[in-house]
Length: 253
Ligand SMILES: [Zn+2]
Ligand SMILES: [Zn+2]
View (spheres, protein in one colour):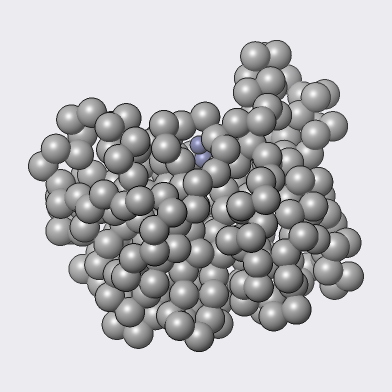
């Protein structure tokens, strides 16, 4: 099993996971042409992707989903609430409705969705496993819930939202209403909350931790790495950072 990011942040997200003969994307925040370009960097073409799992309807996650699905013949898996929030956009794509508490198989990958607190209709995040290894993915959550901690326990790799540093957000230039939304219970995870989540999960088997969905305005890679590395007692640069333009390259599990 291996995984890579095509880009992460408020201008577009897509995470690629491969196990056996199956490749799935989590989210597709890039249109078909940009998606193809980014897949090429990882040595793949759009035809190599079987399906896209959608976390929620915000455009940085779903912006390219239906155009790519139609163009590349991908199956789209999403919750009823997420599909309903898209209205007609998904009408002619091949969709599969998922239950936010029900595991399902996509080829050689077992997908375990779980609900998260975020200001979308029915947002979920995912733990993916090939039976031997577990990859936990969490972006776009306003706060840490006991259920999130339980789902992300004992993973071999974690991709964790480190959206903002609370002090930088408070001191930054965003309008007050936006600051309240981002920092609120249904907004985005700050570095300290991501660190708290990490400290509550079983870290013993972790081979990779990657900070993701960083705000370019209200965070820095170093702050996110410091927050997560303090929990694990590792070197700061052992913590990976998913960037907006590059994402990150393949990591093996
Ligand atoms: Zn969102
Ligand atoms: Zn987002």
